[in-house]
Length: 120
Image (cartoon, rainbow, N blue to C red; front, side, top):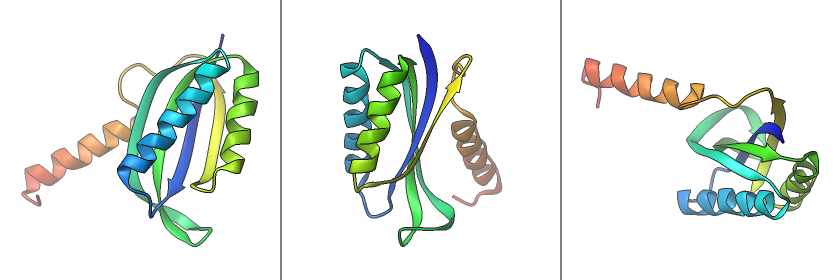
């Protein structure tokens, strides 16, 4: 089985529950196409470097996927149809990162620094 990392950006005006529903729908598409999601991470609402479809922010979600290449085609086709997803990228990897991703470690490090300074 091939390994992929799939990151998608959802519109800024969606609630966290709606973003979770998008991630669940993507997981369902992957499982219907003989794949498996090994990890799902929601990175939260982040600023974009430039506006995308009048959005200055977006919800970022990472999915680690195992499966055939045909599931990537179907997943990206569904992303094109969905108006709530404004950007996505799927890359093939040699192995999935164990533990939290770099983005999650950065968020934890930032929280720790703020608490040390007393900026809560």
